[in-house]
Image (cartoon, rainbow over all chains, first blue to last red; front, side, top):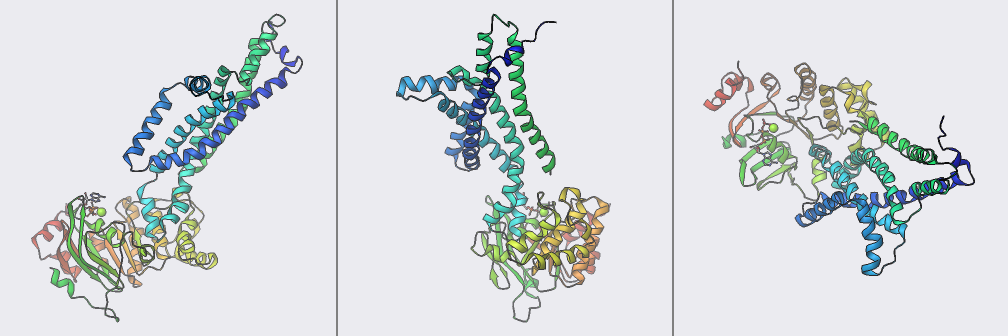
Length: 225
Length: 258
Ligand SMILES: Nc1ncnc2c1ncn2[C@@H]1O[C@H](COP(=O)(O)OP(=O)(O)OP(=O)(O)O)[C@@H](O)[C@H]1O
Ligand SMILES: [Mg+2]
């Protein structure tokens, strides 16, 4: 039987390096996700506003984010800004900026969707009981919004984790890049390394994203109204 | 017809419990309620009937300040109630309302649904309010469902809980807007039984319904309205349902025959 090329993983510190690369991916997505969620909540509430200018601005923003490949955005922010503005953003900061730009739009849209999906009668029956506007939001509307939101935003989080693999294009040494380096270094001694290494990278992504998306599924079931 | 509404018995302090005076309501320039006046005294059960779209729900919603009004005034115990007024929340505590669609809070258990307003609005003690909640639940036959969630209940059960949730606030008057209209026929009875019980124990109610037999059984006074105006008003419901005085009243009742 052909070698699966798993042997290279046990050479030297290779496996440890892969884990370090994974940590880079997770770190970038964690920071981006946290900022995206916070700003996305604000954006979502603003998106439900009746202000036409605000609405139009958010629609354009959302369209740009959806149409533009993240890779192009990464290049613009990392390479483009250095040229035009003379900024010297480091690669990781550029990556976080791009993911936040993306995440706020998507998260904002999720928040907006969750807010408008709460039926008007929920506001009215709370107010009919004598609750003030603030109490109505605090005890009736927001808890329902968050319940709808959490499963959806967890899915966004897993998408963001997966998409961090793009950052190798701007020179960040994350898990996929480490994998490539290991394969390159061992091209002659174990030519099958590509299979083994990428399989392990796949497994690592899976181990991170699977529990997260299971959690989403669980919460969705538990909170189904 | 407006004259007959002046002829209501007054409470000891000389004021009716609820007084709707020359109410004028428009939606986007379209007149929905025209110079509508109605006085309700304590203990009265008033049933409002009329064709779809004539403004019955709008009338109740205005009474509870869920809609703004373009003219006239609505007084509860002599005090005006208005949407966006500072005291709207306080005034609404005097009014209990149950809607047609089951409007329980889906993320809260039955007990939490009932206790939310007493605890947060009236700042009552959980123990005391909880005890009253159980008594009320017992009265509607649902004490064993206190820890369930609304999704586990049938429509009829949800409506009975919605009534309990309104009652625990000790409202002066209950507004019921077609609370059985969305129910399967076999569940209508259990809800109407509860409302009949309330009427017997002296609750003041303003009821919109399409259940004519129920209206006849429960009403002290019937108001038949059309296009935002009172067409016929009767303090003798039996007589009204047997032979309305107006042609339009007769036509409307005929539409319920097969
Ligand atoms: N929010 C709104 N905006 C605009 N028009 C409205 C609104 N709510 C109600 N209307 C209109 O006001 C009129 C009265 O509606 P309302 O719901 O009070 O009727 P109703 O007598 O309760 O009818 P039904 O028996 O079908 O419940 C209708 O013509 C309706 O289209
Ligand atoms: Mg109606």
